[in-house]
Length: 130
Image (cartoon, rainbow, N blue to C red; front, side, top):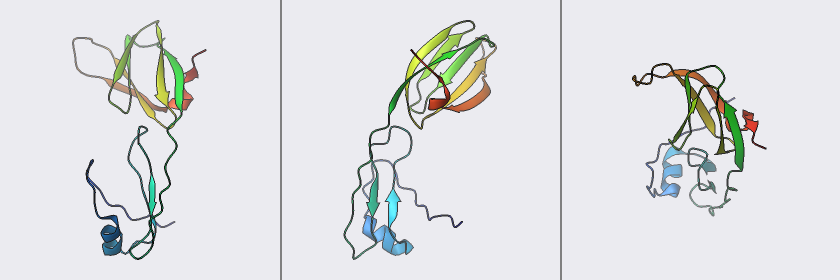
């Protein structure tokens, strides 16, 4: 299976897409922001053809929960950077988005900045919050 071409574009930049596609010699491409909070997607055609825009549906918001039964403290880290600490024996409900990956980390010593990776879990794999 061939790997599609990739070009990095700085956040907030407004590149000349027709020129970018022409220089790279690409056929129609999908321009897609990264992360679950992406605002939209555009399908673009190479130079000489009309651009087609296909707005992306907003990511589905999920209400999930996590119970820490094993570690002194667990931290859930989300794609937008925010974190939720959960002490042992407690649980927390939280909002996340379909397709988002949540990093679950254990903190053994609260005076240390060290964290152990437990797992990376898709948001839809957490238990539902009733």
